Image (cartoon, rainbow, N blue to C red; front, side):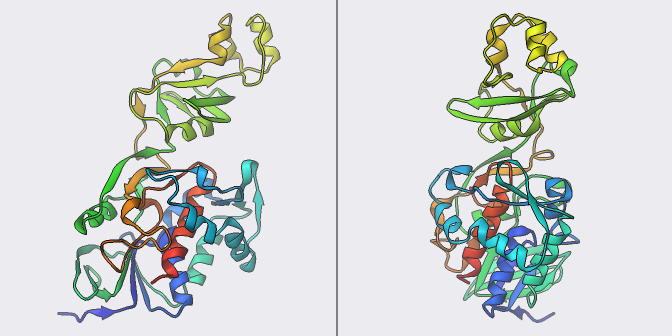
Length: 358
């Protein structure tokens, strides 16, 4: 029987939040073990932003996040800001650029961000292919795994959500939270394409749109697909959608139509197939209302809405109020950002908060 290896902190998950937390703790002299179920680290980082990693958004505010407690994220976001992360990116000489709406992307590749995180976490022990069989708590925490037993007074859960299971997403973090008595806000796919009937003839058509549910609205591109609607506007509104809700779309925002003829619609650069579909229907061009039949699910969702209930966590440190030494960071927590770098910023901010506390 192998001896238990002792550390100051064990971090479960080697994604954005887990690696950044390891770096924050290692810089403070903590002995850290990062245990990753998959065969390699940072897989979601590498596929993000079309491989360029939209690593933050300069306009990040608490209002850019969904949570049962909309105030929870404020503390962490205020104490580790987009400017703080950009300073780190510059320190590692990673070239980047700003796209629309405050989004920052790598010029070259998402690999630059992953290399930076690994360099910052130098000194932490990262163990991949680590299947966990048991987590128990005594004086501290003991994690039994396929790569041996690990012990530490602090345990950080950075296991992510349910989105994109093909790269290893599981419900492990939620199950662990339940094991220790924490409540889970119901989860659902977020930033996900929506299924809408009778859209096949419009597949491939894209147009500027204002998509809204009640007072929540997003003005960005919408894309019709063979199964429904996608594109930034619809991905954004999807995080606020639940089954049975009606979505309204303005297909010519800011344009006052007089006749709604094909010629008039074409003059405002409405794609031909859309113009054919809505010719003569003035109101519906501005107020197309539809009820999606569903979403494309976690397989196509960029994030998971819901997660570990923030009422059970300290907003300053991400530590469980009921279980000292147990922390939850990143997507596993019930804090979900909009499209455009906000979820990465939550990963950095929440991980930094925990890394400074362990």
